[in-house]
Image (cartoon, rainbow, N blue to C red; front, top):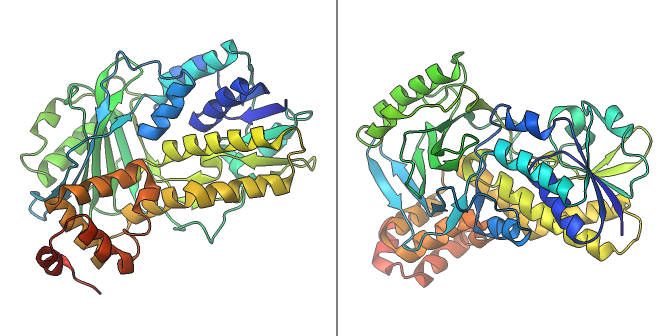
Length: 420
């Protein structure tokens, strides 16, 4: 069995650690923060996991909040007209599960559990690659599972796989209470030319069954709150005012929403990026990146945490199959390339696709999904498993036959189809 170091106590690194422990490896987790500091810190994201990722967590005995949280069921996509009314509503008849647990609660609990199961947990400064280099000598494999700080600089940007070179949205998010706490579905409202509003069930650090409210604003538009230098509660009031004006009559109960604490909000920008998987430290040793260190997603399509979970599980399998041989740079590159072909390219494709205006054939898909439940199911399933959208959603040559196969009547398809 191998002696493996994991750097970073987020979804990807912790999940990989549990899998490697189960396989009999020696695992050491390096984190800059103690579980207590993570629990008491600022909310990092509103990460949600879809069905397949949740099943992987359950298989390792890591779903600690199922009995107390509101379990998400189903995703709804709405396209909003210029007057604020709903133009198209896409809702599959059979909802699929998803879960959103506050990462402060989750990661702090997982760190303690990982140590309880036999891993070594070390709290050390990790501000740059030189500090990392001082801690990881003697390990058979070093996995860097954090994209924060300058550690990500070890992994150069891959321009062929990175869809953008600048942020496409300005992001503001709030964990709120007193707002639809029992509603199980998640909703993505698309406001063409302005951005998106995402609302989903969320189980918070304060043991509150609330909602996560995410504004994805196109820069310079009314959903872009990044320039407002306000504390969290005042920013939430600005958000309420904006949404009540843009979506009249749809979110009146949002007036009662509150932050549980001042730490329950975030804002910033993310450029969806893919990096090359092999980093090299000053000592000459090579390390492999994982999760956000290599694949950074805008949160709109909710692919970040899911992709990280699937990547960690993929790495676990490859480590098991490697059977005691050296973990070379070639092995690292091949492992990531195989994951990219198997899953990663599709997750990044869905992220990029939602951030761009739909092409004409995709507009036909959206309109068909409004009318035909089978198309609605196929479309929303592509969020849960992005591989399911390819090639029919991205290749117009395939789209028409796919829609006909799902029961779209030919006269309706001719009416909706507007090829470029």
